[in-house]
Length: 347
Image (cartoon, rainbow, N blue to C red; front, side):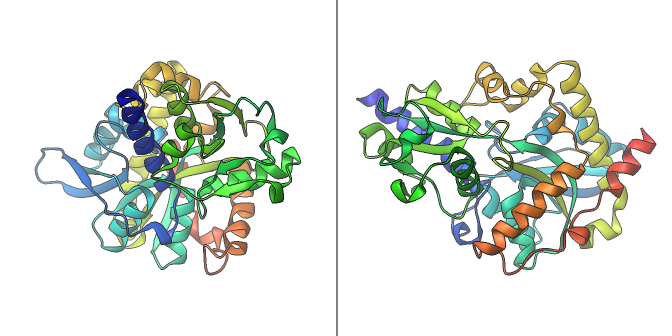
């Protein structure tokens, strides 16, 4: 019993971090706890970069995990004359948005949902790079009666509202022909693991790394993911405050150079990705399973592709329809690919 309780605590931590990374403004009351690492150099401009997670388990940063942990980010910024200060926010996406609004960080890497919501709420930011254009989600079941997607009808399924997980769920159920009127949705975050373990919930929808954590801890099995389904995914991005960007365009180029180096490193040795992502909640060998759906890793490129823009068009509309943003964002002004293009030319 003690082991199960400990497992529930660990799983709850993972799920809260993953949901916070794709949460909305309504969740921003959660305190953003920070763990900061500062490089020691002199006569350089300071650039304050933030992301969700902790130093021990830097969840939700995808390609930026590699750029930061393998030293590419610090190196490229130092070459451009900047001293890196990196802060992790246990409050996830909402915590990052609060830091941007308070002018506590200049750059953020996190989920597209909080990035879009932050922009809609007045954050003066620009997307300068992608760090995962195809972030996957999965459904974990702890009920042996559920053998395929249609079996979710008549069951209790945890789907946190106002998150990218909800976006995935709606697209997934449409693709699979699931009658959502026959599914009892439970809107839970902190007690989700306990509900699954006690049988009060039959299934939970989570990011694939959240789902893999449940399996790793022996709670349920992965029923299915959205791999290969249209729009049944989300993305993670890097944004910069425009006031900082205007004065420091070379910093945005340096960040893209670091991400390009990180991407090249993954293509040469995929273990770099697993090792950079690993932490206290999920070891490297389990992260390998998280990304097993597509080991070409083409979705990890920092380049913002036309297919990602097409996805954002749909996502933008979904956010407006669900009243998570006031009105659709002007993506032409929110997204700027020029810094990536300059980074490529200067490589």
